[in-house]
Length: 130
Length: 348
Image 1: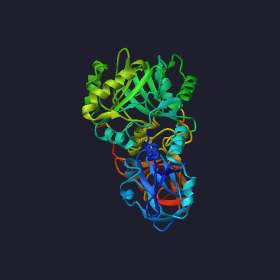
Image 2: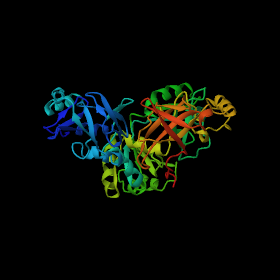
Image 3: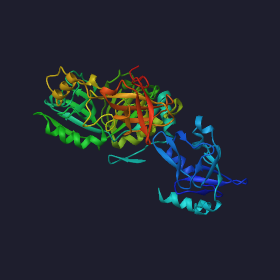
Image 4: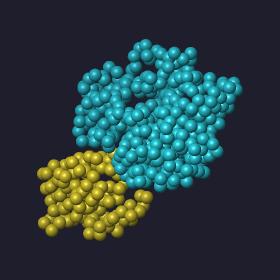
């Protein structure tokens, strides 16, 4: 069973977002997503200062067998990019909710979070795609 | 699991890269029972096969295996197969799963007098034991009986016929590593699978799926039907000129291939290294000076080499020019590199 932390919010496309105390949000992909992709070898991410738009593509993940677009759970300005992923993209496989985070953004509109799935809803979503 | 040509196939067991590395460094066990086994028998069997195959069937000795394309009259590849000679009147042809019914029907139309053709695909399972420790592991099998010890010392592309439920064990494979392919009655396959995994565990043996099978063959640049080979691709274009024997009196596709040899091949299979951190996947366009000159046939991250590589079928006029691959609408430079990407040690 994939691990789905309760405190996070999710997209239909398997990204998660975590609201931090300083008002920024951390974005990554779910345990289910990394497991479906298999061994991840390259990650294309935006740069600091770039703008993310909710539900639009902000990068790609290349696994050995397939490539997948990354969709932004929320809009905002990128304030940090996980540079460790350049040399060690498998961090996403090993630790999708911690060391394998992708980007941090300064939220443009916190109300966007309301459009995302709760852990429970996301669990139902991946149950349907089996 | 994934559906492939009507079979339910394991893509991976413990992770593709882990399985890939285990085959390169110790051993992996593949269930490739989806491959088709067609048996040709009778006094006309040899002549039948020699006409279907571009390679030299008549030159085979008993107990020898041959890799050969089968071509259409235009010189395109109908399938690429292994042919096993049991004796002068008994042969087994191992075909790709997606092509089994096509080749069976086509071969039936070309049977010489005194030839029978039997499709035993459903009755025969195929396990591939591949990797540098494979011979050691094979020797430990009790289910295979005396065949196991004998097969462990076979030279490359030789096989031993078994008795009863063991059809044959050959020193062949699709990984580029030393290895064996074991044809057994389907009813015995699960027990043999379990036995080999237990017997080989201390030597690093583990299961390997279709994903690793593909990355392993890709690194050593073995062609995959449907990617590097197809009805519209000739064996000469795919770099399989060594399997086309123009000295044979006749075979299907000979005149078209002779013409292609005289004129020069229109396209060539190239090895490319992608010079950015992206993967050029099957079907992506190859460009030279902004113009389309070919397409990627297979591309992935090569686990053993740690590089983003691709096989591409490119117009011969463009092979010496700087090339680029179109990845998500953007041209990415791709440098030509020699094939194979990784030197096989299957014959060592």
